[in-house]
Length: 207
Image (cartoon, rainbow, N blue to C red; front, side, top):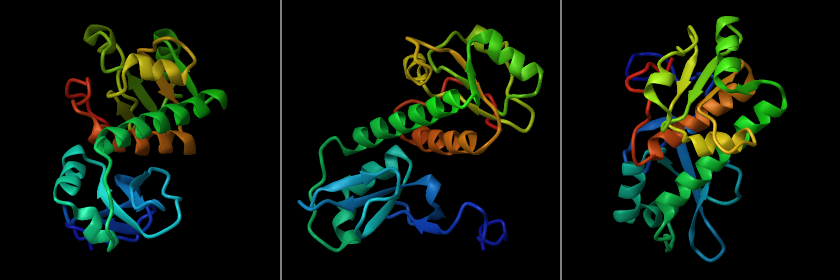
């Protein structure tokens, strides 16, 4: 049972416990780590690497605690070495994963960028997810609203969004509903926890 009394057999799948916080949650809210052949801790962002794995919440403070308190060796039950830049490396890999997933959505016709195209999708209720660059103009971003019952992502930079759309920078983007949109939202939520600063949504609701 969860805190609210609901059962845990939800579509998110089985839950895993974070070694830093002790809290259990669906795997899409955690980062899996394994020990490589040389005993070095490796982030398994996709959750597919072989070997015994251990989980840490997708949260910068939780991961820093796991590193500082040497919790990986205890959980993996073996001596391990932890790269000095592990926390930043996890953030870099999550950025890449989010960008690549948005790019897949773009190539399949399930994503658009640019103010006018995004506004058209929103007006026609074709958009399920609104994405806006954290370093974009607050005034410009305020002219577009999160889709009803949709999601908002506001912690990618204009350069990062640009990579997803094959452009130098992108401020506004939207995703249609579907499996790719769900993956983008889940991966972006993990990235949000790893960012050094919060999103630029200025209090905008995420859903």
